[in-house]
Amino acid sequence: MGEELTVESRVAPPPLSCPKCDGLLPNELGEVRCTLCHARVRIDHPITRKKWAEEKIGCPDCAKVLVVGVNKRPAHLKCATCSCHFTLLPTVARIEISCPGCDRQLRMKRRPGERQIECPACDTTFKVTF
Ligand SMILES: [Zn+2]
Ligand SMILES: [Zn+2]
Ligand SMILES: [Zn+2]
Picture 1 (cartoon, rainbow, N blue to C red):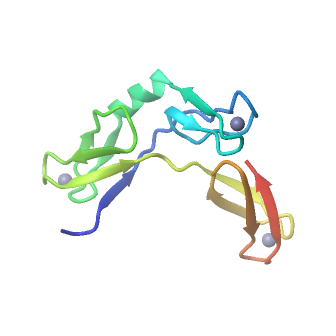
Picture 2 (cartoon, protein in one colour):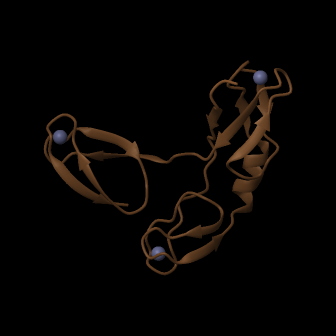
Picture 3 (cartoon, protein in one colour):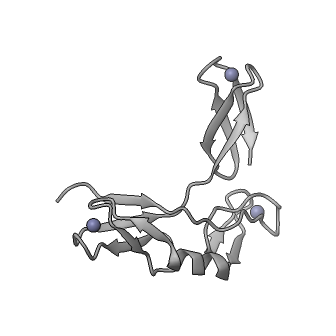
């Protein structure tokens, strides 16, 4: 047994904000918990579900393209060609923000809530809220 094979999905639900606090909700569908005010919110997006089912991805082992056919993420899949099992992970949204110290564009994963960021170029520390 090797390590677990994973592929990141390229289809993501649209960014949605919490109906209670207006903060950014996690990039998921179904029952989602707002990381800012802890409200439980049910969100669904049929277009994303359809795109998820129709998404084509390359097998991480043999690189053969296959249609996912599953309308949720993460999805556990098996390649019909090489029989390997792998997990299709939800898209991690990334954004670019500019450092207030040196104006450099920093690319990072977008996670809801407040984050402390240290610029690798000039060591300026600053806070961002998504
Ligand atoms: Zn909230
Ligand atoms: Zn394969
Ligand atoms: Zn900087």
